Length: 198
Image (cartoon, rainbow, N blue to C red; front, side):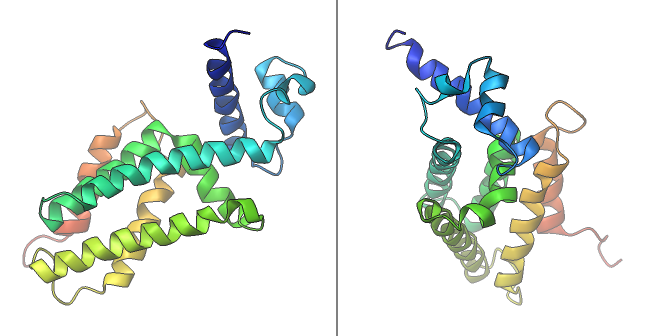
């Protein structure tokens, strides 16, 4: 196996594992399941990873590192608060479109994985996400872009729960694009659903 081929095969194995973890659940997926889906023997999988825990660790840590780097770039930008909120919502729906398995694994398995010390960073990412949205919403209220009577904590929870749950029903290429869904979501979030004076 050449130096060039090794990372490619490793990436393929992680993609296969991610789909199985998302579809079957982490606990219900065995190393043998992953190996069979990859067309190799279980023993061969151990040449790349020492356990399925290492695989899900790499899947989640890599995905979240990329996602939060994008969020941080928005947070550090000079655009107004409303635009930052819009950009972060769009980044979230893009993540669901581009990384549905990673999002599903986190949504479905985080509570279980947090029982293992090696996944303590997932709690840190949850806290980082909360801080991101609370900062954006507070900035929005302070700047006048958002209503002064807004309950920032409840709004954060609403955004968190309604955005990420979309991974359960959104299917790329079926119906609306993730951009169109983000457009509609932002219209509801920022402009409401009632007509003026209705």
